[in-house]
Length: 560
Image 1 (cartoon, rainbow, N blue to C red):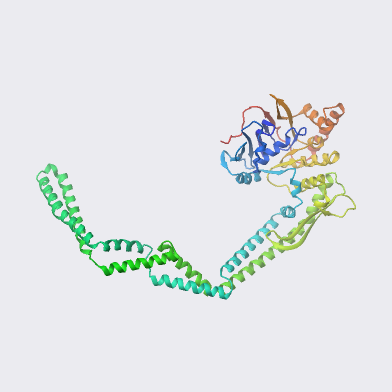
Image 2: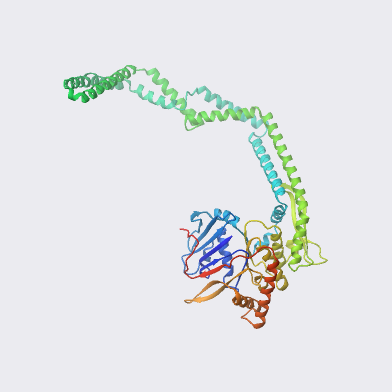
């Protein structure tokens, strides 16, 4: 449920805060007053494209915030900031988010039927989705099984394609792999770090004389000079019990230096001038370098390449068996997909007639007494959505043949068909927004639209931008958007109207310009009739909403 909408510097809106309650809220106002800007603000919160042109002239940025509450009581604050020059920013509960994340959460909170949403109903995939939603869990399960099976079939065929092309191509690849594996095996790499050990050994062998001389010199310094000096120090300290701690430390150092001297001697003895070994080490390093140049940047990569090549060679050598397995698995997945598609078609056909009858019934209530809706489910090529083409047909008047919506419905008829479908397939999210759902209609048809929107408001929060008094009269709450001049600038203000103020607004909507006694009487009658209708309709209106303008405090958490 949308509790509060705060808009700053969007179009002609300087700053407006509107609080909304449950039930049906009508948003009205003169043409150009800015009522549609409230819907555009909601669209921004739902992740729509941000157009810098929407920023109010002279402002550095526009800002929209919405405070929502889910059915379990969780509150969310969505925000969108549109700089006049730069990329927009989105926030979810004060945290910077992407427009995609904003749209994902917004889709669970609001279902917005804008002025162009009715046209989407003309698309076959949308009609199919509406039918599937009406058909319920059985259709969802069958569709899920179909998509899983088709994904498996694609995966099996992709694996089959990876096995290679014709026999000649596979034979050539297998020969190459055998050669590469043999070359790596012949190198007999002892480990991933073999080349590092060889590099150290080569450095030692290449300067054997110099290395041995350095080790000998170091040994003599340690064994003679250092140990003699330490021996004298140990003896001197040992003569005084008070220096026991220093004596112990000097003996430890003496032992460590002696151990170091032995290590120097052993290393020096191991160094020999061995030209043959040096040549062998250099040859080995050259071989490993050639192997790395062909098969990897390091010996670890070379060994990994060899392992992968053996797996690939095994697949090629057993191609026939593996291909047979994959073809059989793909065939099984195809069969499962076909079975799921058949099951889905049966479910769709069972649901088509009741859905058509339900929509037809609502169209009769919406001042289309002779309208008839039909839904056909015809076979087509199998895809991820099934193997059916779903088409909604409408005969708007008696004696007419039912034709596809795109060719049979006017703008007003299409809007009413959309509303009828929404009534039949009502589900979460709990906030529904209709922008100009009454386009192209008036009079009794408008009264019917308002009454059914009121029914829908009994189970969900409904916001409706309307130009018809007949629709607005059925609302539990009415917000009027008006233009005013402030400091030489046109600004939009939003106010909640009740009592005589509401009668006056409905009178203006009926008369077109200003008010008249006749229009006020008609407005009062509309409100009275709507009130009687609401008393007999399911659901109940909640507390009245409110609207604030100017710099009043805001309850919605600000995004930083």
